Amino acid sequence: MPTKKPRLNITFEESTLTLLSQLAEAENKPISNIAKALIIEALERREDIYFSALAEEREKSNQAPLVSHEDAWK
Image 1 (cartoon, one colour):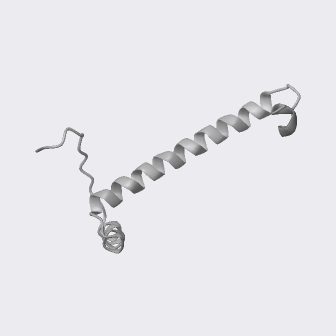
Image 2: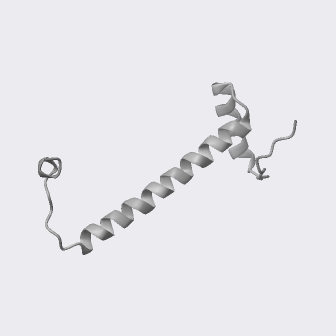
Image 3: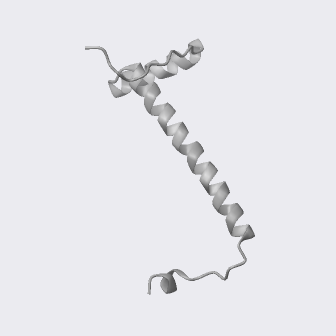
């Protein structure tokens, strides 16, 4: 039965494909699963970087007094 999930074709350099193949063999998983997991991990890291930068910017522009952790949970 065909999948309903969208597909994506990616062309890799030989060295990258070799690394993916080695990871797949070491984890006993298909190369496509390894590539998918790495892409998801990279997207999550970029999201973390974005939100960290946003939080830092908000901290700099916020003039409100800081509340200690203990006081915040009282």
